[in-house]
Image (cartoon, rainbow, N blue to C red):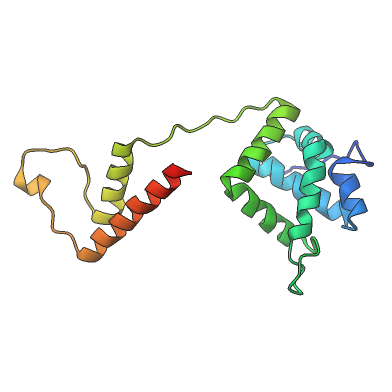
Amino acid sequence: MKNFQPLPTANQEWGFWGTSVRNGYDAELTWDTASRFLAKEFDLTAEQARDVLDARFGRHLADDLSFINNGAGNANGPISATAIAKHLTARVADQGWRDSFENAIRETTGKIFPRKAPMTKEAIFTQIAQQHLGIETLVTRKSDGLDFHDVAVWSVKDALEAAFEAGRKARK
């Protein structure tokens, strides 16, 4: 991805480029930044990144750039590559947005993204025990030295908070 060179748009009227122009953005800046971001984040070729941005999703993505704060305390659209990349990074960190990106990429390019199976309850408990309580395993080993642990109350509190948060995430 080091030598990635974005391809020019094949859809100057619509898609990401056309919408960027109509919204008053620097189309070259937004196109270059979004192309590089998509290629890096989703492992796309230059052709795939161009096709995604030229499609309907690209038009909506360009409109979404209007939510970038321009530094004066109001949303007015992108003013730098850094602001655009930061905005796009925040979007793909949200699972709903990430799903939208992946669906658009799949519809446009045919690329399939593997889905991770949700963690089992036992795996979540073990992860919390390891990370917050310093307990290697929750399997009973029938040995007092292995099955009983001295744990600080703040570690127990951290573990309970992690379990609570895991339950909240599972509800969504």
